[in-house]
Length: 354
Image 1 (cartoon, rainbow, N blue to C red):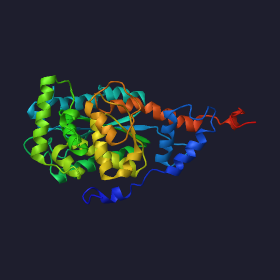
Image 2: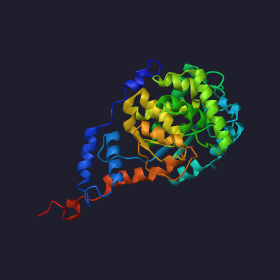
Image 3: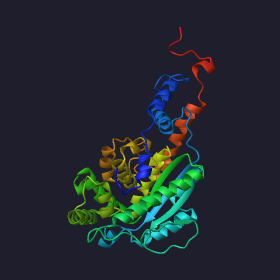
Image 4: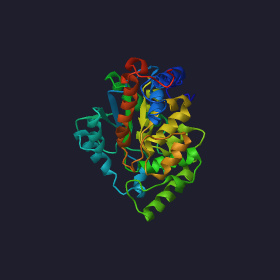
């Protein structure tokens, strides 16, 4: 257990309740359907029971947490958009106009926008101000963060989950916003998974092939210069990561503490999940992977976590958008356990009847 990451919190994380999952699995076979006929939805229902320890789990209402921060490496020209877009998108979130706001309204989710490291001072209403610093340093030139800054950002994520839980959230959808955060995530993944940088790098916000080659070169230079320890996820996070990525790590850890399902979004969210699971392997059981991003590194990150996402819609937006779109499947899985009739209740003969 890393001594400087909320050890009391990590000590409270226990593996999911396998016995509760088995009870759910047996109960599913008493419902009015052929055994296993609802496929992956049944596996999801079993996981939700394992997470909550309940035969009849609840996942509503969901809470959406979007962490925003800037990245110093944006100065290297690795993104199709200027750094100012991070703050502009935070304003869009706060006014309810972004994709995640639309999708959150469809599932009746409360959205909290958290400024954990935007490079400018934000004053708009509807944003939680928890800024650790004004963006990370340029990882091509120096460590992105100091270890204590990474820890502070993790704690921001923990605190956001506490607020969501106190507001009644039964499931968490975690998203992010930060120009150049695919660069940071690709660098982290290359080190944590031992994979070539080119395999982890995609178009991000829409760069062309020449820009993509430049992005690979910048990341390779940063990895060489920073010498992050692949066996120390916090070292990788601090030297190559982002403040919003660290906050997401904290959110996943806190979700596991409180036995809340956490729906993981795309590439950046999955890299954060990989860090959380490296810190505490028991976290893995609490994670539901919402969708498969078009970012090429996402496949590598998913493989590292032995994860099979629920959806594959060709998306690469971030914000928690894919996780929000996957949430109705969690509702359906929980509803199946809570509302479907058993063979006995319905007076229907099952395949064991004589």
